[in-house]
Image (cartoon, rainbow, N blue to C red; front, side, top):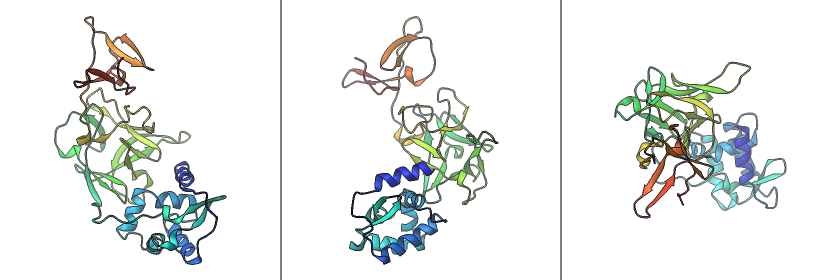
Length: 289
């Protein structure tokens, strides 16, 4: 998580005259930062405040300790810089942003599908993917400020489970009673990925009933992968396979095309554009030439 905060920090830092903020702005920032990241961890606070969840928490009034920063940051006084990391200076106007009017709903119902439209489902506390059945097992509620995902079928929150030491990675995902203080129940939903603590939901989208686990995020590279989970309404692509008379399938690999035995992966999938009369590879996002 520290790497994420540091990346956000470096991206926000501006080459401006350092230390131009007046004391009231500094006091407002320090008060807010100490609340969102106890221990005066400024880079962590910056990452939280610049996140969607942080912005909404301020706008919903969940963090009154940040009200002064929001007010001053959006005024001419906020056009100044503060030290946020070893020689890095950040303009306060890049830390806060105006609240939407009207505000988006805090709770949003979600249904997550793989690229080939198998849907994420809960069953007895476990997660799997299957064809769409239109039941409550397939529905989740995302709290955009608490960053929790609650299964409608059992009322519990999705939780990523650390492996026992000395393997400190993650591998298991389950539902548990919701606990707003549990960092393993906090999820980000963006970029066609559902992630927690740098780990993303993963499944075998070519096998109905496949279990869902957590794996290190590929962060969208490749775009279509076993970690692809998007809002089902946005998954409209229909894929085809190109098969020889002997049952071999055309497969893309590093822009090359091969006839291989069936492997049931995204390298075998293509889209057909009737307008351009062209096939496009799902794995490379390039057209056959």
